[in-house]
Image 1 (tube, rainbow, N blue to C red):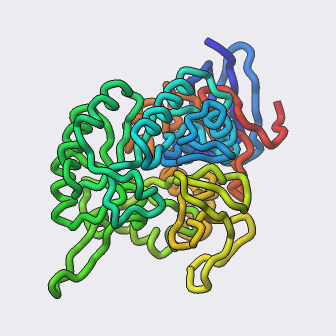
Image 2: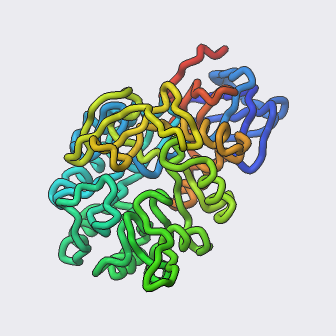
Image 3: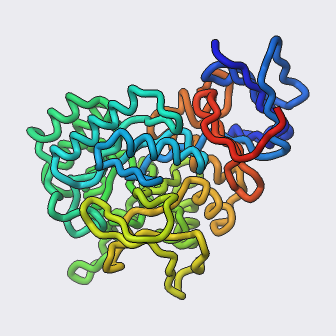
Length: 411
């Protein structure tokens, strides 16, 4: 059965309800019971952790990141993935989806194989859920920080062997308007893989076709996607508008305080509702490392805190952003998951429980893992994050094991 832990005296967010003061009983890797602190009892020995009134939430889930804490997914290095997993728990992440970049197919396969090896090991950090292929099937006009040298159309002779050999691939981002992308969407749907619209210059009609052919999600809304434009005097809606009005599509926001101003994040939530949006870091290796010069997919990147005066959130110490060296585009982010939560609360104006839903239950639903993660309830995995009123992570538990602890709680 494993260890028994009683996590008690906290403001519990399930996230369907709040229990204050609440207690969670953990046996082994799963939650045994949850409820008001005066109602939960344990027979026999248990490790009691009094969180002293702090917030207790489901563990944070990051569905989109390319690296962090000095680790890079595309390096195909087990050491890099280990650094990522052990660093991510400091920001409250309990599970994540490593994301590849556009590159040689052989290099992408090596990265996938390395991720699979890491999945077979018990990392002393966040758990790897599977693989997200972001590229190389994109529209060159919306490549963003993806290396244009490697962007290609999807060909069955390329992707079918990869999908056959690597069931760890559970999400693929692609531009549905490019040749072969609708057939790719059909194949992904057949396999139960999440097909996501990304780096796309599609029109509204082309997005409708994409939904009909298996696409259910949209990668980092407003980033590397078309918006309304004029064609022969007529306004034509793009991916942005399509995502906002098509109920069948879920989406994600890079809520690092740089990629989107609060007004656009409010617009997304107003149009999509609180059920169909999640927050992602889209982080690269510099996340958690500080300002400096880095690389991303073979491109030079600079990390700095400079913000133009017109932006809605002023420059803040410790709130850095990654840009291509010529500062023409963002290059992923250097955000941690707790930073996204702070932005959602302080700048978007959400209350803590609603903001928590965007980084726990919603991503779990979108990736079809909400039967085991994203919710604090009996039978669910004991993936739990404890944070204070300043939204600073104090304890992270992955499948019943404490993987990060900042505060010396009473035991």
